[in-house]
Length: 53
View 1 (tube, rainbow, N blue to C red):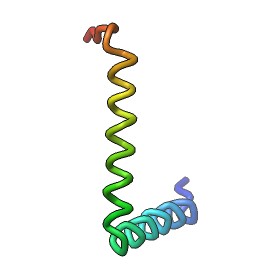
View 2 (cartoon, rainbow, N blue to C red):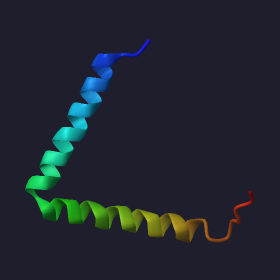
View 3 (cartoon, helix red, strand yellow):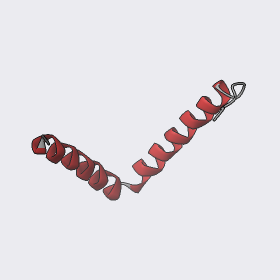
View 4 (cartoon, rainbow, N blue to C red):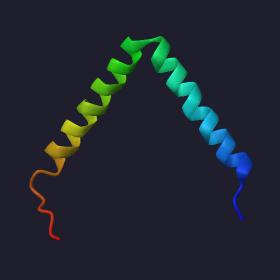
């Protein structure tokens, strides 16, 4: 059974975040910088491990 209230709440959270970033582009750029910084740290910590498929 699908919990539609939970889905509605999640969609509302995404809509609020979208409005926030749309109204303040600098905040969006700062979020991208933070994400990029976390990605660099993750790559540096795991650069000696190999990925096997």
